[in-house]
Image (cartoon, rainbow, N blue to C red):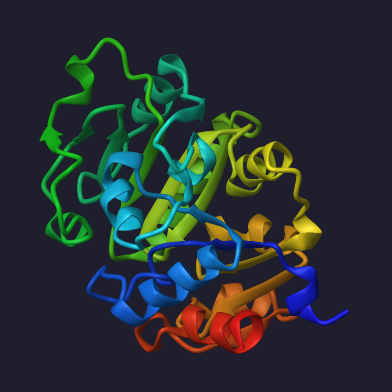
Length: 270
């Protein structure tokens, strides 16, 4: 069966995938997604971003979109109705933050209305073109309730984050799911949370299957999603380690070259 006859659902990551390096969606990509909607494809965006941060981005597509955020900890309908939410427990986060974490590492807690961090990080701030999701600098030791959507660490030295991940997993081998969304971004969620799990909830609600879905991604937090769908594409700008691990997948053009939109135009809209 030709891919066009099989696919009913289009699923995409945001950063490094739909978004260019300026964290924008090109006008060409917007046009392509509007055409997909007009041809009755179900569209799902699945991102590690917080929903308040992601809302204005998906709205700019100009078509209805299901939104999976915080790597699967939240699901919103095209009308912004909250369909699913899951938080990490305060005690689990306290246990992690009690470790002697290098002060050079930026620690961020994704809360419902805002994020909390131990220090300002201009590189992370640049990801928000609109400040819909404010950040406050805090002393985590002074906060009683640390329950959060996601626990996030950032540092330019990837190896430093790998070492931190290993230390956390020694004490919490079964408590969390985790992923590198980018080499400088290490993210921890509750063990039940993953993009693929959230996407399946949407597919079941809309009476579709993974086999009828096509997905696009560039990060390790996309891995299960990419392995679940009937067709999956990995971005040329993805880290080499992910491309090597998913070597069975076709690599398409970069996020700065509208790789997703050009592929969809060629395969589903032509």
